[in-house]
View: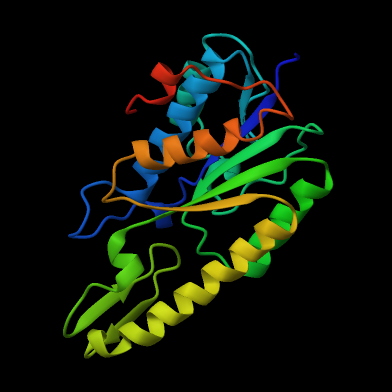
Amino acid sequence: EAAHTFWLWPDVSPSMVFHSHLAQTTKRDRAVVLTLAFAELLVRAGERIALMGVTPPLASRKASARIAEALATHEADPALQASLPPPARLSRFSTALLFSDFLDTPQSIAQRVNEMAESGVSGHLVQILDPAEETLAYEGRMEFRAPEGGERWIADRVETLRPAYQKKLAAHRAEIEDAARRVGWSFLVHHTDRPASEPLLALTMRLQGLAGDYRWKPDSATAGGTP
């Protein structure tokens, strides 16, 4: 029962530093919390973990602390500033856990997922969105500013755009989910107004469902805790 290697990647790019009036937590903070929570669970289960593109796989009980330190000290590194996972070399038969809003083009996301899958890596995508991004929860005249690039756009009656917006978001998500499904990866949606424990437990159950492929079996008391 050899230790399995997990590659963790939280999207901490500028577009993730956002929260609306519907949530108190930024997407970035939630991605980091989920990354560190999974790091701790995996370390306790005896697995090797790594921060994709930044740290090598470690099996030490201090590995989760090393990942936290790496996130704090390497925040400006290209591997962490990009909104897509870095093109790092991942070991065959390992697993990638990716936490992001996945609002890049579906084609670019699918390409990166395919590259990892072709090298024998299994994976799980957790899409983290603010509830306002899901519903376009605004009324009247609104100015929207891009967090990257500085573009601005003014909508006179933003509520009239809601049906078309939600349709486009659903189509965007369906393309990403389909790309993940084609290579055997899972896809999960999480909103920042919900507890972090929900995606933690859902993804834990999915990993336990693959116990026939590797030995990761956290005890129920640990898996049921809130990060």
